Length: 446
Image: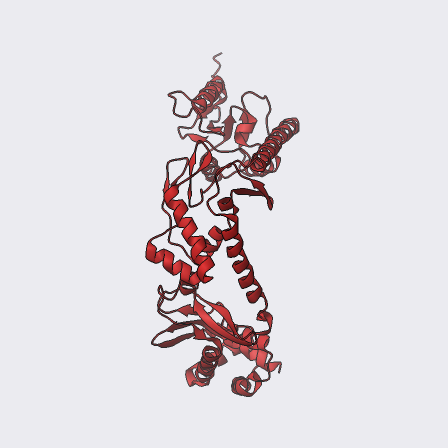
């Protein structure tokens, strides 16, 4: 009697090999750490060939990426392929190559379970499909996370100790200095530019004038080359950058760590007397600005007004004369950062612009096509409201407006106005039509 042979079909297990290295050290070698990890994983997959294991051709390598988070390009690409059903198993040389965070590992396991994907570490025998395997993984990850946090603490302590000794710890070098052997060295040409900035501010006390002088002189912020060889060209000065320069204690030979100043190992550029004169002017300007009652004078068009010349927002601002008389106006951000040499649009008196916008809004709301649109919108939200009621509510805007508190006026204008573009030729107003029904509700409550 002949027996028929039965062929047992072994399901294929598509294996993705993931490799990672925290630094780029040695990555230029012909056979680097990632290659070694991948070769070991391939050998393991080959040993499981009888079980249907097959390596995927795609490489998921993350050189010079930390395991403390999931923001890694190859890992994100692997997760996308898992979501697409292209992977059955992830193979790593060691668990901490995938992640060193217990929280991140929990997120990854949730994704893997959802798509029936298993995880294998070839140097640590466990299987994520069993409860014992999960326990082993959690214990190992706890130690990996502890190691990462301990290393981070050591780095922070070393950084703090180095700063307290006055050492330069990297980052964007300030204008006036170059970095040589990880130390700040005075750049004589730029140092004279820094002294000019301090002297000019001490003479005139006007950031606007100083920025104008710097732009006319062609003086820019620091141009430098990063450790990776990327050239960063210095940008023209604006007021925020000017104040950062004037407040940088590196120029008097100090370094700051956690708001405490320590003597630096580098040479100062600005003498203490000039530094004190500049900072007394800065403090005086700050006291003047802080006395302005901003909360009592809201700007109803805040975030709505744009400069027709530059296309940027116009910021609310104040000025004060004789210590008592206060003026409100809207100022183009480009002019605020530099000067009106960069933007010809003058400062716009706030009261005049707000009154103009309000009058324009009132006229638009009275237009027949706008009334018809308001009727459609309000009745769509509440069919029981009659056309007559809606028209009456809109006509009540004029007498009710004057009775509203400034903050209420502000809210209503924000509901109605989409944008206000101010140019030398006039004002272009765009109405927020979707706010008509909200306006009707506001007026109905008064």
